[in-house]
Length: 481
Figure 1 (cartoon, rainbow, N blue to C red):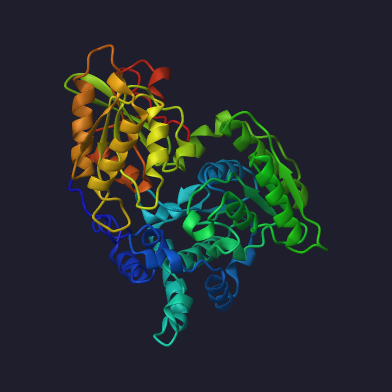
Figure 2: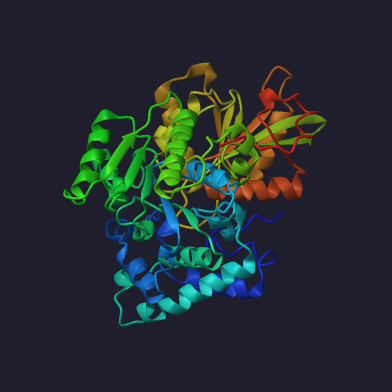
């Protein structure tokens, strides 16, 4: 496989995989300001002046007749867990009689179609092209030179509009929508959903929606603005719970809104409790004939299908030895958990990520080595030299001694992956032959493609729950995120 730059990440490397019309529309889309990439760049001006505002999306949707009002919505905000929660809700709703569910999430791992799903399946190319064309054409008056750049619709504004248009055209009656960043000023906050969820609050995008946890909590809780709505939250810090409660109450003091905080001893428990409370609310508010509590074990395959690059295990054979590979797009330290020990880690991160805290989280699992690489030479991604230096600095400060992992630099992700696989396969029998690719969903997408094309990798369950080698390469399951 040829490892390409991810600059123009939504078209490059997919020329043979997408139809010409869709590629042309994506090229038009890529001409717009794209804060998903620009917010990570080294240009401090962009971070200081990034426009996060719901107004352009609202104006664009009004031109199109407010397609997002054609269905009932569940709106999800939070630092981590949004994708998992969206997948759980979608998996359940897609099995219910009389329900047609659309899902809008971000970012994507391999193909842009992943952002819009109908009944849990990625939108087809032609339907995506139709929706993008409608959104881009409607945006033309707002993109004229006479309109100040800061007021023009962005890449995400157009993509969000296209998602809402596509779901209306598909005839969905329920939509599960994930915030792009923050909440109150996010493009998706035109919804005014009756059922809102806030998964968690941590320090991410602090330079835009922070700088403090209090600021971030207030911004994310801002999705619960509709009178009579409910906000179901997994936020467990008492001081942040108070901020969330006050924010929702202050939206309009005279209007009734409810805030419910769920417990749970793990993220899995909290996700299940939030999902079940949200589904119960939907059943009561919209008078379902019946509601049966989800059996999550039965919905597992549907959920995993919607979560590529999230705690996803693969098995390959190299030099006659099975090697387990974990692909995980985790990029904040709070999401680093349940990793195999003594593994080889392939690491790439965005410029705006907390490398030191993330490295400390990785070191809890005593990796044998960390191979630093970069998804592309785009300014959004941290240069290899800087990542290598910062990872090494953390290791030296921790003074781990003889247990310290070795740190290497590799120019291309493919080079890092190949070296990690080779080293894992050559390890003594008592060592864990595992490779972890982590730090970026874009890295996850690149690794998934090369594992499929170059290594004949097979999706598996967690290697500790399978018979190494023989059983793992026969199963067709993916580990849950």
